[in-house]
Image (cartoon, rainbow over all chains, first blue to last red; front, side, top):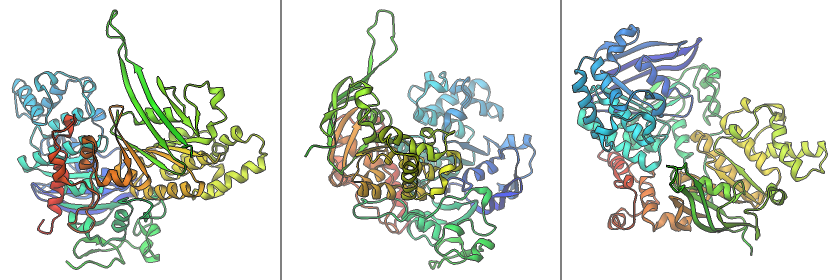
Length: 314
Length: 310
């Protein structure tokens, strides 16, 4: 359904995302995991055709067979909200503060010509009920600032699923929420995915959230897909030194009995990436070749870009 | 032995805006009847969700706020409710670090000056050379190069800035460090560096710490004792080992059930999770907040998918 081939994004000639290829089937969830500056959000924005000025995408993005890259803005507008929709980490900045929540949810339905305004308003109330907003008929007339953080995220979800998109991109949808709300929102997203059969790209810096949500995981670092495969393999039996390091850095016990093994160094600045593997400078296995040449894709139990890693047999 | 820090029936409330001309002014009770002690060299964790009163409590502990009632004792001496003049001599011994060091470092000050600043209050007799020596040694200790003193905060990454904030907090050789969400803004790979650093420094300096976090994994890693707060109240207080092995309060159980965990190896759920059966039995006890009704969904479903047949 969604197919990326060699998707690259650059800013002033510097790559921020390199040669990303992936396929996504209806009903499937792909977890995009990475630290800051890994290119997660750039991937999402490139898919939505919402890259900020100055960023240039190349390669191919096909949604249901249609090439999205190079489409005119007007054509993209017809797809956004209808074929694909996105939810963001901070709904307060994504929602329009001067429009009632109900009107914002109904807006897409009317704009895409799916419903008359009156029917769309009723549908908005039904959607608000579906996402678990209390007293939806009254809430529909509320403005975003009158809702709590969790309720705003629910309203965002209602807006995103209103036109039953085939693809939902969720960019850190629960990172700003308390842990108990996080559990609820994740459960809601899973229910809606299973009800509608939409495909989902779920973006998070949190491996445990990816683990709870995604069938397949893709680990990004410095704009390059380090490792990808079924989530249980990527997290349970990672082959890439970066994925291994990331998992070893998560605290699981007490400092008195278990010392963390942090990855040395800092997440690299995207403007100072080596031409080869972005992880080369921090990696135990890194050598001159790593920094010079982009590692090829190798496939075992998972697929990875690495010159050195020993592959777990498939 | 006298505890380093003791809270006795601490209570803090803030007035809400008046609803009507003749209505009584309502108050929000941010901290209610909180008591605990932190012994020498111990680390106390404070967990709870937003609005539970964690950060208010932290400000009360280092006397940045006066409590409405109750007392804070530092090494047996009351420090709460005193005029600033009386607290000043103690301040260098109680330091605090925050989630976002960018907010606590002066952007126009070279980091060497920022780190040396507390020394001017704590040890005004030091000459410039001695101060520079202390700063260089401290920078090196937190894993930065001493020649970075002339740089400004914006020239550092988030993890480095947190190291600078730690250097500034520890330069006066405090007895107590209060850390409010010290690693929440950091990337996972950098977070582990800072956690190790905090633990090493605690042992090396004989520090007592109070660590505030919403992240139970961070609390479990750093702390010896934990208090769990809900709506300004302490709902549970226990050693870390006991809290994670057998949480008593309904709210603690719900928090732990909601805590995302990674499997240890393929398919195996990570340890330290409370017995789910027990949790269900007690589901009707106590006033669990509505949003915690179905705490298990996300994780169990995730786990199911991670199973060998997944």
